[in-house]
Image 1 (cartoon, rainbow over the protein chains, first blue to last red):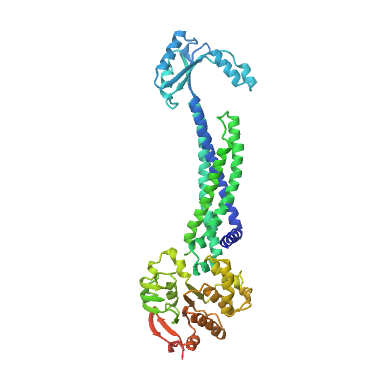
Image 2 (cartoon, rainbow over the protein chains, first blue to last red):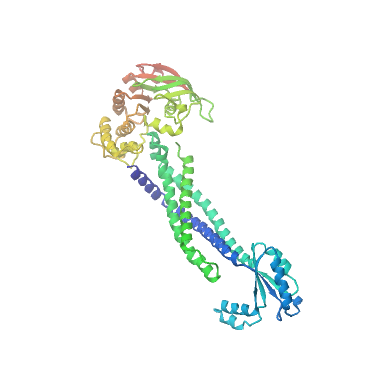
Length: 301
Length: 232
């Protein structure tokens, strides 16, 4: 009896305000989809960050015949000088491990890496990439001291901090993530206002019924429940659309990003499902709460 | 059953009190006519009983409860023991007679079997036998008010409040409505009826409480409507 009554009231409420309901569903869907996309981007950035922070190194390239750096005088450092550089690196407190890479190894690696772009791999020659030391840091954030000491040291051509390159990339992703979250926040505000308006209309349409319910002593919960559920159901429908949009987000945005940019391992569907569930719950709770708070103003107890 | 103890009510943004130092006691099973000109405080009196308003001063006891001590979430339980009838009937136009009466029980969560048993009984009691499936717009004003009374009484309240129940009804039909209220009163329900209807008050000779400018100016058992308003 009770459940049937409540469901019937909700159905009537949603149908009477059909245009408002549609507006609400669309807004909630967009808000939650953007919010979810923001969270997904953040997860992707964090995951890639974790992945890369184990692997990023500071590369110390030594001078060779082709060096553009005038301090090199286009001469390779001697074996002694190379050993000095190596032991200096190893003595630094920030450094975890120093791995030398010869021209030969670097050449092989470049060949393999660009095997898919024949134009590039064909033109690359032995000696294009000089001897180098790959320096692994104890804490990847402590690169500044190493870079400062190695830059302009005799025999060193250039010092490349891979992390700085990655950071630029992460900054772009971070910006994207914030843009999504800010638009989502604006949409959330719009959704709350729409819920308030929808529920206000609904309360006005049903003022006769609620007036009688109040009079014959129906409990507040009983009077308010249909309205709160009305908001929650609109939120749920919006959430379902948001889930579909998030599916697209995963396939088209993150999928392409990871494919084209040789990112870390792509996010799995489990993580996406988590975000979807969270976004849907957030949408439902948001709408239910907004309905409830609106009712306190427009439905006299 | 209803005790007003030196009750004063001043609505916000108004300087003149709607009720001023009102002392009235209505015992169980009484029938009281509340008379007085418009704006004399009759409706405020009824709204205070329902705790729709709070008194500015003084205490009100209804059905053994001090209303100021009643928490907001217990107010619905108070209202289940009070039936209400209004001048404008307040029926749901999209529900038939049976559904209108049953609505009052549905929304307080009564079981379906109970509703099916008591609703037809009360429809018979108010004299609407065989009209359970009529819609409100197919009924006369008097019949609609009977439906409203049935809805107010279906949960067997201890108190029935009627705010000018015959205000929209012709005199001949009013007598019928009044008889229904009298019948309900005879079952032991306390009835408080605010009215302008001198003929009814004079014909039934119940207790009369007269309000003027928010004060009780007369409280008379087996009273009449009063000379000033064209009574006997």
